[in-house]
Length: 418
Image 1 (spheres, one colour):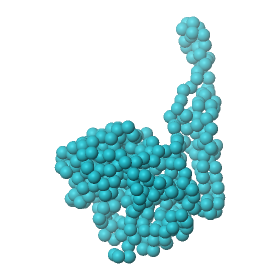
Image 2: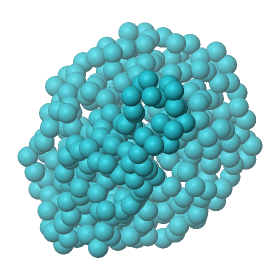
Image 3: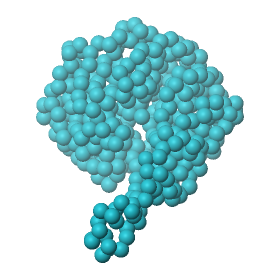
Image 4: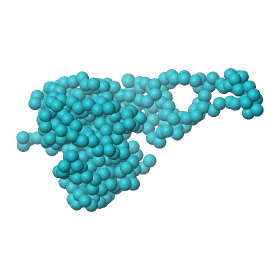
């Protein structure tokens, strides 16, 4: 983004520099932007159109959830792709569920939970070809941020954005809310406004803000932990809200604890009483993005720098959590720009941004060894289960066979349609 300054004749400038600058620099600047104008619909219109439709090409993927033979892949702010993964070598994009403003999701049994901007929508997916909205819980995610000074009309729901590249001339330092969202065209490639009767619970990635445990749905916003009782899965009941420090990003369940990643550290909440999580411990770090996973004795935390998170640290932290009230750093390992991670047994997988997918032997946490780097893709999140790794990358949804951890092999890819 460059200002075009009017400059007088070079010879005059050299002889009368002060005069030239005082007389020739204008009080306006020209900037080239991608301009996004929101398309609104009423809540009633949006809710009436939450249904499964023909599959759509994947364009801007976000988070994913895996249950049984299905992958549920978020299309940022649009909805959820339902992918039949019965044959991982040939996954089939079967349906698309339109949910405007959707970023996060979770699935248990035949019930899908998803955010619809500020609301929680509960959907019966027992018949994948004919879903039914069972409940909408309003206003449980009250804060939805947009870049710049854009303020949404909260009486309606944004269902799309109309893009137009334009050059505008404005006064220096002028910022106003015009109902239009502007982005620097040079810096932006796409808009991305983070018991026997128990149902089967799916698996989320480490970038998730929704998680399921013991008949409860836990969700995190930037500064709160929300608790929903889902003993009746299709009738979630909001039961508690715990205020958290600002900058919360992810949540990960393990046994009787919730591990919450934030931009300044890892928080651990005990759920001996699942309706009333209580803070059990914390581990602080410099300001960076912070996904986390955990097992019996250790938590694995990736720290990454970026424009949203700030900071310059890119590494894996291994944290001893045997004393849950006093977590201690075991060792840090340098990385390029890590995001999602997953662990199966002693095999650790890390999505290291532009450096690709990295596979490690984590048998000894003091000496984690790199086994393989799968380059040529910019990776974001990963789920591993039964020798199969599903990876969300910038250019596609990849699947890898890691039955031989020393020779992880790609078996399929769903390419994105940008």
